[in-house]
Image (cartoon, rainbow, N blue to C red; front, side, top):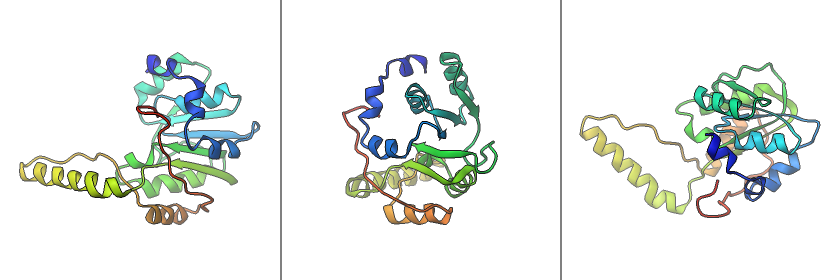
Length: 193
């Protein structure tokens, strides 16, 4: 974890296609939470940029390594569908690469995020959206994998969700959010994220 984090520069985060949208929402006096912070790239980047940001992730070992790497970060171990924070606590939440891995808890996680977000706050989400390539190749191959594993008496493991734009927006609205923008996210260079 530490070697991966240490190798990232702030330019790699600024090059993300969604950075201009996120940057418009941020104010220096705000209090932010990265839900599902993983190895903490966005927490470190925003912290180094002068923002007050906390991170939460379910991987205790990763949080421990991140805390050892940067002891001044505010990090917790926890699940996005049971956030250990008081109501109306944050000016903004980030969920970058999170919801697609929430096996059966997407709507609960969204409701929890709504609970801890201030009324005038924002939720910034990055998820994979079903596009033509995924619809024609990825999804049929995953279905085939599921059939083959099931036929062999093995349980297919959950990989990740792929959302279609309209159902995802409906889910966001059902959790109590207003949707201001939906934009595609393309990786800036091969292998980067």
